Amino acid sequence: MTGIGWCSLPMVIEMSHEGPKHDGDTLGLLRNAHHVAYRCRDAEQTRWFYEDVLGLPLAAALALDEIPGLNEPTPYLHLFFEMGNGDFVAFFDEPQGADPDQFLRAHSFDRHLAFETGSEEELLRWQRHINEKGVTCLGPVDHGFVKSVYMYDPNGLQVEITARTADYDRIMAAEREAARRQLDEWTRRTRDAKVAKFGAEAIDRRSRRAAEGAG
Ligand SMILES: [Fe+2]
Image (cartoon, rainbow, N blue to C red; front, side, top):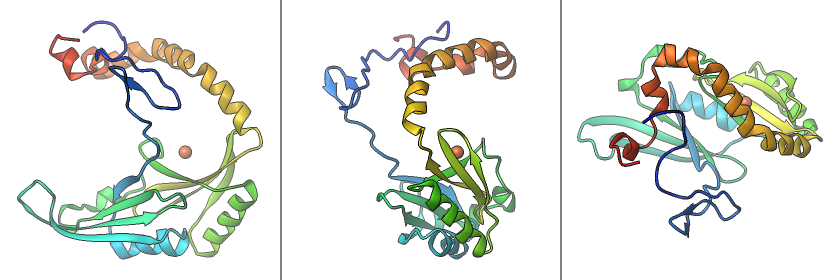
């Protein structure tokens, strides 16, 4: 494979409100997150934060003795907390495989979780409530299109609550227009440094078919 082209899978992708096309059939949109999942240090400590502080009800706590498909005894609890739109934030409590270092505060670039609330007023009410619960909640930070407050959960995961500003739609429309151009410019600016760090093969890798020479 050469250059920095698109995925070479032989499919036509046309984004629309019906989702991308694949060989003439509509695939359907990937509509929402269903769940995002992280490791937790302790299920009850995590329940306290997500249910008692953030108000997301515990929706499931699956106690399992092995990872499906692997025949190794691995006792773990898989927790799900439900957000206002029915999506979930999920956690795995697996003491056997856990290590204290996994719960050091992670850089927000590595991972963070942002919930959305309905207005800037609600955002400030959430911030006050969280601080009153004894969890330090900083901000708000004005990002132009949104304003956000920030805290850490008991597992070292940065949690953000964000609210759209009055300019959200206008800013996002302009960003959508510029996004591909910005990405291409970024790629031109940073490619040499990334080739030096990761190697071109790692950066140019795309589909399995391309790797097999069929793409
Ligand atoms: Fe964020």
